[in-house]
Length: 94
Image 1 (spheres, rainbow, N blue to C red):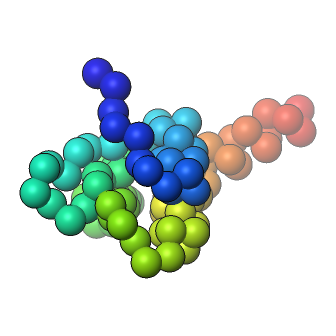
Image 2: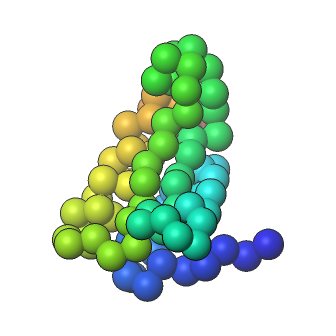
């Protein structure tokens, strides 16, 4: 099933970045103020006390560029993302 695209190009780009890093997007519903919720694919005790890392995506943010940065930051700061980056760096060094 395809998802709805966010009307703001910067936020849509950040959503695509999250999806490329295996994050999932869950629709917030028709009557919600949020557009969707992004969730980390990992759920373990080291990740936010056993809860999913997640980021809310608003339909009409005041400053879309700031919200896009927050989405990217949530993905980049996930402890699992850092592990993957370190593993990739080790492979490249070999």
